[in-house]
Image (tube, rainbow, N blue to C red; front, side):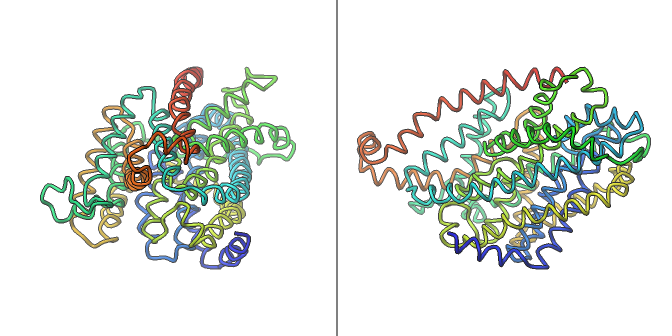
Length: 499
């Protein structure tokens, strides 16, 4: 694996890779800076661009959008109290107050430096941790993999919201969607309804664009609060070194919190930002200043939400389990490139994996330069009317769904899942459990089928005597699910209500 790391390092140092990362960063910041246009939407509609590029170029391009978009959401949050992404909600608490005091430049600089520190530290953590985790995962067989996939589904359902029944229902729907097509073990057609196009299953790309991008577009069209009365302006002095030093402890604390949250599938940037902000407020000697224009509040939220970015790649790359909505889209990019994340990926294409992780770290240098120079520009585009951009976004969504297979049926799938996503949002159902159920359903079914064959009719004895690791994972699954659900419902409610 050390040889693969150095081979990956050589692959990573390509000029075209960094050019596309820079484009991705700029595009992510641009879309994140537009109120209502989320990073998730940007990833979904620009995903097809990566298909025409080499994996070592296309996937870093998407990672650039990911990084830039999470930071970009802080720009309207600070300037007009309108978060560009959900991850920037906590940034509005102090960022906009600083703008009202004429200190928006300091707030934006603090958001940028905190974002880059959190992102870089978590990326380095990811690269270090991927070695032992990959070595461990490569020892897994179908029984252990099936148990881990089941545990992942439980974690996602438990963290999907305050109503676990809604999460479980959406996951069940996703698992049913994964059964449509041809049985991977027996070769029997299932739930195709006589449609030839469904024999190969539901296409992943139209589903992802449909459930993630279309509801966001509808939300922007219908949300009149997105009309900004005045253009955002960058005011005041730049951030001073002593102010950055004063917040450094807070930045480090939030980075650790965000990194830990990023490893757990289903939590994501919003949870990290809220917890980072609350931890900083509780640890502060002047908590009464939070919410009134405190630089530490901006630093805490932005370091935490960006620190999630790297660790979400750990379950994705090692087990093929997306950590959140955005890594679900990244999984689609890997699959489209012929790279199925999981244990076999490290054995066959380990150099590409390490190249991508190395690019993630090096890209933060571009992140700093582009972000620092472009803040005034992004501040001006905050006031662009959404109505001018919606037609372009719709065009990208439709073209992106069609271009991968050049099949008109994929446009129908886009419309179906777009409607599904809009209805789910209207009923306060989170689509993430459905997407996770769909993505993990096929590998879970395959691993479970192999496990049943290995057990030869005596599953309990097989688990106790031959696969104690699988048994241990299955035993802790309900405990982990319950603890996460209780934590999400008891701790996050006061965090949101108090802020």
